[in-house]
Amino acid sequence: MSLIALCVAQGDQIDQQIVQQYVDDQRASRGVLESKHTNNWAVLVSTSRFWFNYRHLANALSMYRTVKRLGIPDSQIILMLADDVACNPRNAFPGTVYNNANRALDLYSNNIEVDYRGYEVTVDTFLRVLTDKVDPALTPRSKRLMTDQNSNIFIYLTGHGGNEFLKFQDAEEISAFDIADAFAQMWETKRYKEILFMIDTCQANTMYSKIYSPNVIGVGSSELDESSYSHHADSDVGVAVIDRFTYYNLEFLEKVEKGSKLTLQDLFDSYDPKEIHSHAGVRTDLYHRNLSQVLITDFFGNVQPVEVDTFDDDDDYDK
Image (tube, rainbow, N blue to C red; front, side):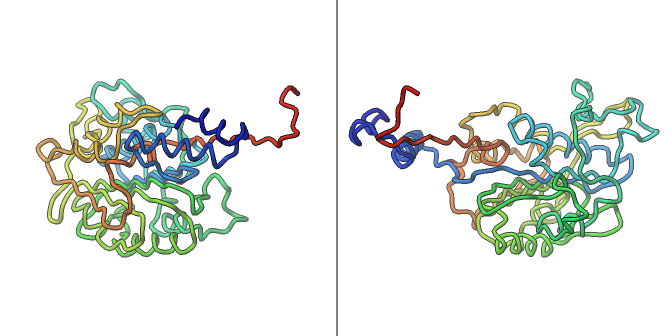
């Protein structure tokens, strides 16, 4: 039934319920069940220090560029960078960070907002950001994850890791149990609707193995006892500039635009062990929707809610 027919059937009175019925019918006819979330957030973390880990910062900044391009504003992105390779004296191109040897795109432009940098990036800080266990008087809103029970959150981590741990700053580690418990606290305090947790590190899939909270998708770059590899190096920069798993995610995501109908299943089906050089994993047993019906923009984009004004019978429509 068309929206016009619905309105006629209701005596020309347009209300929110009629509009919602029409929208739901249209979504169902397209075979896509869209999330009922009302806002999107991203937490993007590079946990490594030192020049030779250049690629980890490029990984995080590449994801940052992607979610901003697809509509998530800086006010809803928490960016944590453990090192600032752009200002490293070894950088042959000062003030820049590239994720490709052709250096076509500077990821470290005037258009980035880093919320936590250097020694601010710790396990404790990361967990406090997720759970909002911060002092509101000392922590500005721009550095807080101000989510609610209707928030979809994309959480991306990159760095050096192993079986059920990820290093922070080469000085401490976050465990799979820490991640699981943080997500549990977030669920209990109604801080999310759905989470897409993605991690690029060695033995990455072990990091989502302990999660037990509902509505979470876990995605990792490599299985137990597998390494996660860099994609290529820039001879002028002198180090690898991006990891393989992140590279191939970005290659796919570059095809996604606002309003795209591509789904998470399309993204995950694109993973090829021959290209990634490891076996990427996807955990879905805690998630309630079919991935073939979950739009990529449900996590990498920003929902644009539309409110429909309602009128009483006595309203003057010509005013």
